[in-house]
Image: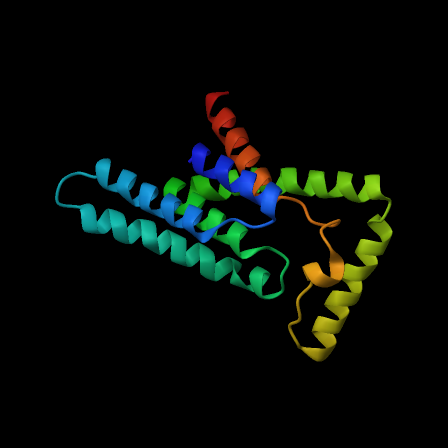
Length: 169
């Protein structure tokens, strides 16, 4: 899992996206590992559980993709994490990553001195969403650039490491 997350973080920092072939490789590795640790004769249950965890996670997070608040690659990485770790451990690892992402985002906003402007933008976005009931992208690279973007896959990777360390102590 750590190798998958490190690779995803690398692509996210370098290209602002995580290639589908990387995600597919992660899914195949996760399914293979699930089969290796499953007792004989229960392979179908292991595969179904793995794929079900991925599907549920993707469905729950899909609205964040529709509004372009989170990238598709990030959602797929989260789905792979939950499929690999299970719901309980996956949610804990993702919560660690989200906390680190929030700290990084706040630090970036403070360093760029645009916290107030971005909060106003968020407020206006939600006001428009509730008034018009029309879902429009919160973020568009052609309009907003990459100045406000954080590499969330890197935060997920660090969150996973934090989760692993929490198991030791």
